[in-house]
Structures are given as structure tokens and as C-alpha cells.
Image (cartoon, rainbow, N blue to C red; front, side, top):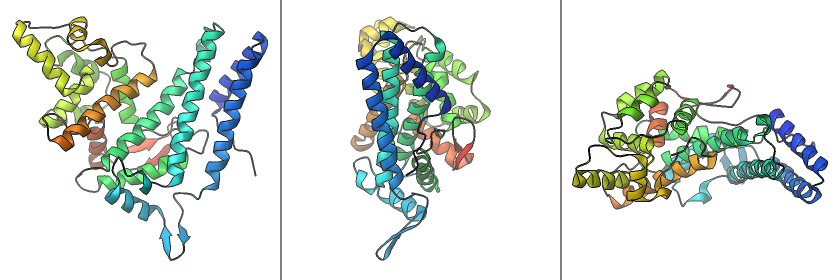
Length: 336
């Protein structure tokens, strides 16, 4: 069997550089652990390649499985707990991607141990791209649970199939470029809070957003549910947390509030992306925190948005712009 290259050229250069640094520093135990993890990922890639392509037709007995049947089953039967309708290859690709992320975090820890301060040996940019791929997958999966207009579910399922199929390639790291842009803008925009009107946060977001993002922002403000989800995204707080802070401001008569006061009211741990140096995992935690609350409201019928900003935005892209999932080099990865 031909050995597959599982890392991009840039990632491979980083791994080789850190391996050489470990060797030069005499860190034999740490170098061995790194090599063991690299070997484990290579075996995962081999196992993954043995499963049939999601995009090709596969016949078992009298039934045929292909992209059309996959779209159908995911659109009609997928929910958060129903993982068994997903192809084994899809589940393995996610584990494989997370394994790569964890190894890149290991490289980050090695730079700390070796006291390396070379920006070219920073693994965070590589972690970010792969984390965005996982987050895009989650957003698309969430769109499959619950009602959606038009054929957005079909588009979401087809895009997922393309992501799962492409992860075997070293160079394919798929995400929505528009959604990535919004995530990166938000990561670098620290909330001011103020009157909690969102004016400063909207301006910060809008001045760096492209036309598609701007169109969605203007569209979202017309719908209370989507507007509330966008506020969660801007402030890094859930709808319930925003209500608590606003009520506290009303009782105290304060027209404005700052980050330290918000932290005092709610607790520092609830403030997501409140520092510009937060690592990529914080971006995922920020999304997942809002995602869990939205799902809870959906079933309990409590007040507040029942979908995250990311789900609403992706649905908008699917239905209105023919959005595209792209690889990190800008090559079209899946037309959705």
C-alpha cells in the first residue's frame, strides 16, 4: 500500500524543525512521544483510506449507497444523538482531524519547554485552520436538526460529504470562507459592552466584513431571533447572561458597564474571547457554549435564540448566495 502524506508542506516543515530541535536539546523521551503520535496518525490515515469513498456508489446486497442516499438519510434522520446514521468514514475523519489538532498542540507545548520564540515555529495558525474545519462541520450538522427553508438541508448534507471525503488529503482543510471571516473578525474584536446596544461591536464587525457578511448582518437585525443570536456572538454572552447584566444595569441605574463589571456579575469563566491572545480552542468553546444553550431553548421553548449565529448565517449562505466550502488555499472544495 502506498504511504499517504498526511501533513501539508508547511506543517511538515514545522514538525521536522521541532524534531530537530528536540534532538539537538537531547530531549529523547519527548522526541519518542512525538514520533509515537505521528506514527499513530499515519496508521489512522491508512485505516481511513480502506473505507469506501462517500462520494462513490457502493452496493451491499440489494441496496445501494451513494451521495444521494447519504443526503437523504442525513436530511431526514440526523439529530445530535443519532450518530449511527453517519458513515463510519465520516466519524473517523473527525477523530483523525482532532488527532492532528492535538499533535499540533503538543508541538506548541514543546516550543514552551524548549523556550522557542520563533514566530515561524508557532503551530497556532495550523491549529486554527483545522479547528475551523471542525466548527464548520458542527454548524452543518446542526442545520440538519430542525426545520429549514428550501433545500438548505440537502446542500448542508452534500457539503458535509465533501468535507468528510476531503480530509484524507494533506492539503484539504475545508471551511466556509465567509464564516471563517466572521469568526476571525470576532476573535480579534474585544467587546466593549458599554450600554449593551452593540453599536461598537457592530461597527468593529462591519468595517472588516465583506459584502455577503454585511448583507446578512442587515438582514439579521430584521428578525428578533437572529438578532439575539448575533448579539450573543458579538458580546460573547448567552441570551440569559445578557438579560442578567441588563437587569443589573437597570436596577443600579448605570447607563454603561465595562468588562470587569460584567465578569463580577456573571463570573470570569463566562466571558468568551475577551482577550486577543486567546487560543483557537477558546473560539470553539465560545461557539459550543452558545450552541448548547440554543439547543436547550429549542426543546424547552424558553425565550431566546434557538439557533446560533453561525447556523443562521450558514443557512443564509446556503439559501441566498450559493455559498462555497473552500480549502485553505482558496481552491473550491464543495459547491453548496
